[in-house]
Image (cartoon, rainbow over all chains, first blue to last red; front, side, top):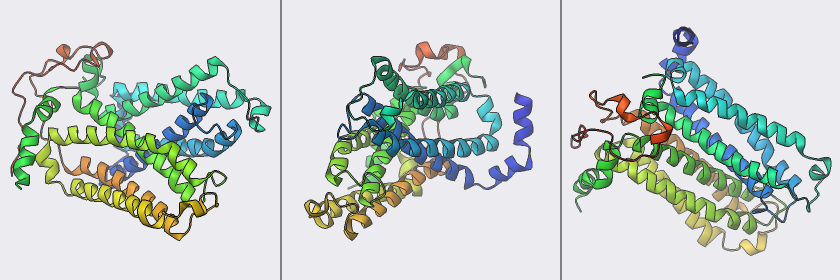
Length: 171
Length: 203
């Protein structure tokens, strides 16, 4: 893996990103802006499942309002994130936080897809009286915690030894 | 008022010292800062898109804004407190950093934009609350808000690439003594030997 990271870091593509000094901060800025879009979209959907916000709207309306922003934001974050990894693959691949983040990200995306597929047609047709099961409500809370952990780990990549000590892959 | 002296005092404060000498303080405080920024930007964007008539057009403007206001302000307070803690760790370096100064100016501009909308252009909100799009003054405020907050975030990242770090884990720190992660993740005790390198304050 480290050989792959070193190879990737030496490719002209990676070196081009590194050479343009403004590109990495720009990509990180876009990445953070999208965190705002995605996290607030997920938070709103989760709070609507918990019946804490937007109770004047059916769940379908809330889902249609925020799901496209969530998915678009996730795609943009994946693209900017991939470019950031390409720019500094050794730093990312030797970071414990990075790998846990990728694992949690996979769980987050998979659970969003499963949740969407589990939505009955009547919910998506705008049944305002629909109430989610306790299991789904717990899942909504867990999803918000999961994405907070993903944000935390993203920031923690830069401080792997400080956070993980001997468990850091770079130590 | 001696601003430089004040900044030096902030750097020498207990909070500044704690930030510099507690190994996990900086990453954890920065991570909370990012979470707070996400909520600030994300919630403001929802309100701005309503002003512009892009989303939530069937809901009254005041309903959209009021239900998010508490989230925006709570997150802003968290961002300000964590930001102040990061500032205290390296106060002189931040103080002399141009992107940092520009970021403070941009936040002030965002506040001014909000005040102008609240007290001038948006005063007649009752007249257009249920309209699909706000009048010109409201649309300008919404567009400016998105632009300014985007600038704030870009400037925040820019600080990280220009200010440099004048403290780090000293060579002599025993990594094993840092513990193995989760069990000590929230242990805020000093893991560094006392006498961590002082930040090179004054130029």
